[in-house]
Amino acid sequence: MNSDEIVRILKMHENATKNHYLIKEQVRQTQTLEPKTFQLPAQTFASGYHSANSLNPNQKEQITGVLNQIADYLKKYKGVPMEIQITTGESQPTNFDKENNKKLNSGQLADLRGQTVTKIIEDFFNGLVKSGQLPSMPKIPKYQTQIGKTPKGLDPNDPKYQAEQFIRFSVVASGEVTTECLVGLKIMFVYLNRKDEQIPCRGDHFCDEAVFDVYLNKTKVGVANLNNGGCQGEECNRRSIIQVTPEMVNSIVNNPDFEKKKQLVLWYSCASQMCHSSIPEIYISNKDGKQLFPNTNFPSPCVATGSKKGDKGPWALMVLDGCGNPIQMSVQASNAEMKAIQDQIAAEEQEKRKKEEEKARQDREAAEALTKEQLAKIQRILEYGKTNGLEMASGGSNNKNVFAMTNFFQVLEERAEGNFFVAKIKNITRNKVAISFIKDPETGSPMSLVIPGGSEIILKYPLYKIDTNVKKKRFSDQFMIPKIDEEGNYYFVDRKFGFKDQTPENIRGSVLEPNFI
Image (cartoon, rainbow, N blue to C red; front, side, top):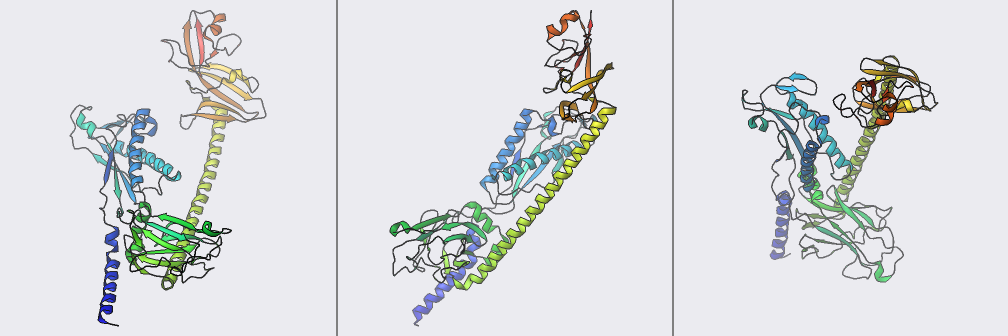
């Protein structure tokens, strides 16, 4: 070997070594993302309010609008791990919980709002993950509260106080945005039927056993399908192009294994039963269309010729730098390492499936427990209704007139009692019948309650006493509301209706007791 040849080999080794240690810098050419701040308008919650139920449509729309902005930002950098820190602000003047009618200590209102907003944002982003719009849930640590610096003593509505009553989201990336040079890299797998002595992997492929899962390190970047069973001549040619996306590169770079290897290994594994794994020609080009492989140093596109037909693999094809330029060809020498990686990926997938199955089992058990709890609650409410009676909510759009449902219910007793019209009814059928807009005695919220066949229950309707100069015999027809009793002393309001200056505007679902004057 002459001196020029020795110098050339040493130079190749030097360049390969230099590339080996520059990969991290090449892949991570762009900047680390700075925290991105999103903020809701001041006083998104009305003064003294903190629950999701207290939000009006406009306030809900404001929150959704900001969450959509955050979602667009996460989608832009999909694959980069993100954290969303919630900060709720509160001014120094003493706050009052208008929902629960009590005084609050400093920071308590901000704390309550933090709990509400955390639940809203978790539900929002869980929905995006389930629908496939985001690959994973952003980390949402416990919210922070911040008390304003403006001292007490000003008008409670002073703009300085209002500016300190905020809700802010700070989105922080825990990974780095990847380089432009690797994003958009195209890896083309080709099979051509016409033989060529200079390219030994061409020709002699007529089967449907040539489907490959393609990887860069531990990240799957696509599937190359060169199946061509039953073809003839030129129609046997196949081409499969895999393009590296920003999400894939983020996955590669932010994987701890990349810190150890300092390289990108291109490899594939048979996705069929027994692959014809020696047949692909491989061509690599960057996002600008410049061909990176084959090149002067590595002129042959056949890099899996050491494999045999029927091999399952995996097969290491080549080692690349951070921009997709080949550093070395690697076939059999790295197969053991690739097999170890493949086994590790399989083990991780199996562990992931186990966790998913365990979570599904826990969710089922939680659902079953919830169902048992719900059934127990319904039983408690039915028992309470038999003894104490259940209040009916007025104004309900779906409230049923049980007094008219004579095929389902029989009225056993009825009487006026303070501000209520009390009716003891019985489900005279064998089937369950639902009554809507009953007040939940445990929460006060309207609910629908199923009354079992043959069961009795006491219902307490809001009772409104009014004065009217309309004659009793014309009252029901004039106001189009049905009477409950034959004497015409009580009437059920079955539509949106109210008497000016004597009742609220809408008393649907209530009972009227007119005083005919």
